[in-house]
Length: 358
Image (cartoon, rainbow, N blue to C red; front, side):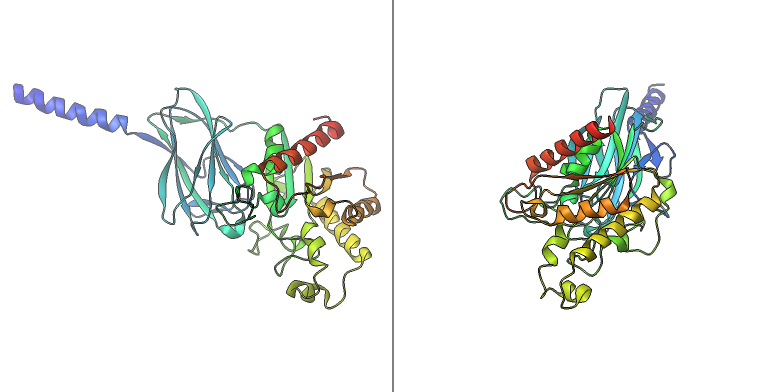
């Protein structure tokens, strides 16, 4: 009899251990997971490429994990729990489980995985969430607005984590979470997209392609085109021309020679190129408000011709729903630091509040 009781007790302990380690698997294709950004669903995982591509889940439970893999090892994920940033994860090159939060107060929570690095730094594969115990996924969150950004290194949060003044833009120092774009979107509780790349321009970039070449791609350097019917923003913000403003003054640069030969582009050429790009955006989104922004680096310093090119391009489009908003020149070296990104966000937030009564 005593031996039988020992066996029963042992079986019970195994059962308790099993229950305590139990978890609920939420596959990446679960319809209650909310994705922000252009994210292909390939095979067994969702592919996060662009800056700010995000995976969001509401759940009832005490903790959550995620199964992730990075294709380069040069990416970071920001973990946001109940609208508060709690940690940064650097996924490895092999598929692995990462604890997002544990020991939470039982009840409803929201967790978000936010890719803070841009597409040429790498791709993160998201396979599934795992909820502690009997945790359950809930219907996806509601977002009041939709905003889409087209930008360069400023929008990507290039070098925003470099506190040494060296303005380094490698993956350790880039953080799109601190970008004015993300700060603005979160202020308005907006579902937002960031189609951005450091060094890119409209007429010329630091590499052999420009934003008009990739703006309509699902993944930047892949041929598949994005289906614009899947996402219609209320507002589109375009913050480009900073790289153009430098490169058109560099006739010895390889990209200058490739794009322009030996002759600097005229103001008319630049204005027309901008008008054409904005017209392309308008063709995708007939009813969106479009904000043609610029700054806060030296393209908006006193005496710069580039705000004027944008104003003229907008005037020529004869579209009452296209606006200009220029960020004041920050007058400091390098890319914007966190405080300067916040100042940009405050300017844009104020403009949107005032102009659109959000």
